[in-house]
Each structure stands twice: as structure tokens, then as C-alpha cells.
Length: 296
Image (tube, rainbow, N blue to C red; front, side, top):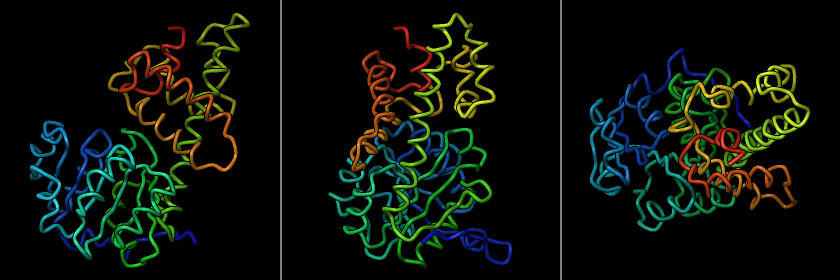
């Protein structure tokens, strides 16, 4: 079951009440999400590398020395870590979530891992986000919010509302369903990135200049990816720090392949290019590296 969400009486719960929220994981995306939460709530932050949380502290968040310190007295806990293994290490193995406290996890994980975490912690709500840093700053991400617990889903939807664009906040009735939605979204990124790369190779084989190829892609199904990554392709933006890293999309692509019951050849082709960029040392750079450094 998928639920379209509207606010109550023109206001969300976040506008009515201030809560104490622990936010674990303040990387590129986590920091942007935390900033929105800080506008309405008292936020304590933790990050494995403390200096990456310092900008949020400068903006008013409280810094915790450890995950356990961060969640002490928290009314809601939000995690934005790199992947499922980080969730197991930081949260599950430490029995970190106090009984009855809603845990909103924005980390991209597989449906299988989402089921695992929901079984381990009955207050688990999976809320992966769709989009990169600029939409995150502008509150225009897509967000899937998944749990069978309707009351916790409403709390999570309310907290996530400032992250999401209009009609992009979707409640679903399981954590695994939310995880599947995120993988579907990132599958589109992987395969269209591979499509743009192959389009560039095809056009160049026929002697077309790069700018000609990019212009021709305007009226194709690859226009979205081309438009998003053209500034990197033509050298107007550097791939570091970028918006969405090679490491992240490669990790997500592996989750897709591991989850599917049938081969995903387009995803696997993209994954090979991501892995090549990792070998070249571009893993922590924007995934447009597959276009920029494709001849290396």
C-alpha cells in the first residue's frame, strides 16, 4: 500500500512541537538533511570524523562524542550512514536504539537489510532520499517513508517533509518497500549514466564533437542525465567534491544486483565503469567521473 501525504490543517507536526533529535552521520547528504531538521528541532549530531560535523555545530547543533551520547534523551533518532554494514556496526551491534524511540534511517540499504533492521528494532522506519545535494539544499528531494506502524510513519513523514519536493514525499507500509523504491530510483541513475557514456562513445565514433552529441541528446530519453552531468562533462564543474560519488552509486548498484532474482546487465555494465573509476582514485568524486576520465 502506498499513501499520498498531506499536512494537517496547513501545518505539520514539526511546526507545532520542538523535539530532541539525534542525527548520526553528517556526510554530504546527512549534513543537508540535518540542516532542515535543525530549523524546527533541537539536534545533537555525531559523525565518525568529528570535524565533518563541525559546520553543523557552528550553526547551532550540539556535538556528541559517541553514538550512545548522541541518542541519550533523544525523542527521535535519524541515521544517514554510508551503507548497511555501517548501520550494523554503529546501531545494531551496539543495541543503540532505546525501546520505543522512533528510528528514522535514511541510509541506502537493500530490502533484505531493511527487513533485518525492522526485525531487530521494532521502531525502525526506513526513509531513503532520492536526489543529490542541490535538491537536498532546496528541499526538493524524493523521500520514501516505510513502516507498517502508521503513527511512526506520520512522525517520520512530518520530519521528512522539509526535505521533499511537492508530491515527492511517499509513505509506504514497509521498510523493505521504501528500500526497493530507492534502489529503483538509483537504478535509473546507473543505467542512464551508462547510456550517456555509450552515446558519447557512439557519437565520437562517427566524428561528432562532444557539444554536438550533448545537444542531440536534448530530445532523447537521456536528456535528464545529460543535463544533470553536462557541467562536469564540459569542464564547467570539477568532479571533486561533486554531488553524488562514484563510491556511493557503485555501492547502490551492487545492492541492486544482489537484490534482483535475474541478471541486471545494464546495471552491471555501469558498475564496471564505477569500479574502474575507483581503481583510478576517483571513488570519492562525482559519478560523472565515468564521462570525464573515460579515456584514462
